[in-house]
Image (tube, rainbow, N blue to C red; front, side, top):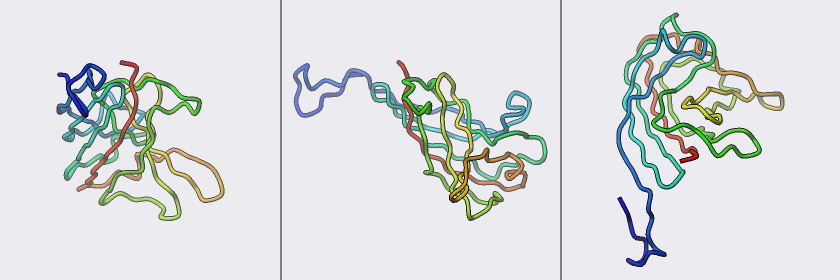
Length: 153
């Protein structure tokens, strides 16, 4: 689909626009193929920029997920690796019934060549660490998540 911005001439044509839905998954990096829960998701892709919005309603990771918490099964593979190594970073999410230390800054990042957002926590004046899936081992977990990343195509 072509969209024209500010006129109908070829200089104003945006040649790559796509939107749709997908099924995101929430789980742990230790066993994403064997245990995860599914949510709902939508995306908009303009050129190489992909913006996703996901929601997980009343899910339960119980004690089956392990490793770092991940949101995965994104509609496009991350690409365009900048010097910092992440194709996308977001702290644009809200959670309910998830345990975490309120002294930490929480975020997710999507690395080059994959479709996985990894949970990350930043300890004030200290260092980064994985946000462990064990913090998500509760029933009735809710999350609304929004992120933007870049792909090579």
